[in-house]
Amino acid sequence: MMVLSVEETAAEAIKHALKALRKRHLLEEGAHGPAFTALSKPLLSEGSEWKEKAENIEVELQQCYKAQSRLSEQLVVEVAECRAAKSSLQEKEAVIENLQSEITQIREECTKLKDDLDEKTKALELVIDENRELKAQLEEMSAKVKSTEGENKMLIDRWMLQKMQDAERLNEANAMYKDMIDQLKASTLQQLAQQQVDGVIRHSEDGAEYFVESSVPTACKNRINAHEGGCASLLFENNSGRLITGGQDRSIKIWDTNNGSLSCTLYGCLGSVLDLTITHDNRSIIAASSSNNLYVWDVGSGRIRHTLTGHTDKVCAVDVSKVSSRHIVSAAYDRTIKAWDLQKGYCVNTIIFPSNCNAVCFGMDGQTICSGHVDGNLRLWDIQTGKLLSEVAAHSLAITSISLSRNGNVVLTSGRDNMHNLFDMRSLEVCGTLRASGNRVASNWSRSCISADDHYVAAGSIDGSVSIWSIQKADVVSTLREHTSSVLCCSWSGLGKTLGTSDKNGIVCTWT
Image (cartoon, rainbow, N blue to C red; front, side, top):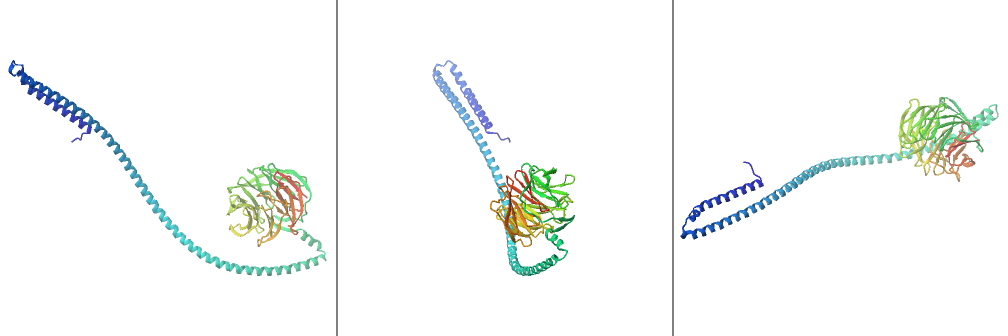
């Protein structure tokens, strides 16, 4: 059976009511018909009575019509109320559907949150278990540390005893050496002995490298406008008087220090040159650049041999091995030191450390490297294993430069605290401190140097002066003034006579 809507039901009810009224009206007309017929007859006696009945019937008929009208009006009102009730019902049903949808969504979110809570609870339990294990390991390691400290103390005592014995043997050797010198002075070998004292011969893979006793420079021989924007690095060729410079104009230039003329220019660097080094055979020049790369030039052809990529920030320091021209080391502001093989042209090892490195150099053994950091610490590393060998707080501010002596036993560090310290490479103990009033380090990459015979130290200042110290006297023996801006780099020729300096305006001076 079909279910009718409210409006259809109301319409049907109205139809039935109208039919009922019409039927009642027809019945009443049929019932009153004989009365009207009888009234039409000329019966004077009954006429007034029938007339009265007719009037009553007409009154009743009018009342019926009025009742029908009232019912119709009431029906219209009820239909309107039904329509309003239907609309309100639909609105409430829509609200109910929305609420049910929200309830479903909230239930899903609650289920998801419950799952997340269960997962987090499991992760927390796992972390708690790991924490317990780490705590147990820490307690175990603490016990090992205590045991190791005791062993270290015993080893230090033994080491001190051994040093005392070494010192005694050294004293005996010095006495024997003095006796031998006295004997040589009385023989025909006196001249050869003098040459061995004045000039030391160090052997490299390509033959012997010679240098002679250095002299204190006093006069500016050449003043060269070398680079635009500043010159942050320079060095001399091995066994040569030619000077190599690198600047912010992205070029490498080689100069003849006899007359200050330009020999050649090397192009191809994509950033400012921050540091330079050269292989022992003078065949390759390596530049550290602000473009995050290292560039290797073949000096003979003037072309780039390698572009070494791998650092993610500016490369501020580079050095070549004292043992092999094949291996170099670089430091960058990505907090890494990288060892490179020039024959293969790629990185062979990477060391990561917590503080940016401003300077780096190889030790004499070709395995140990020294690094100077922004935190003021001097660190020694094993380049093969990447292991930190030793560390010392060398300066209160950032280290800007590291320079190794010719015999490899002493390393010079310069810092932003305007001090220049000499450390024994074997023990990292301070064996000398150099300072001068007015000598202030100009930048984080200001390079100082040790003379060829390890007797002097040269360092530039922010006021354009260059101070020369005697290592033996620990005092300034000369102050050079020619630059008009901050001196960034100093380099001493291996031939001993010439000192090169560069400043922030790109001026290079050679001193004799």
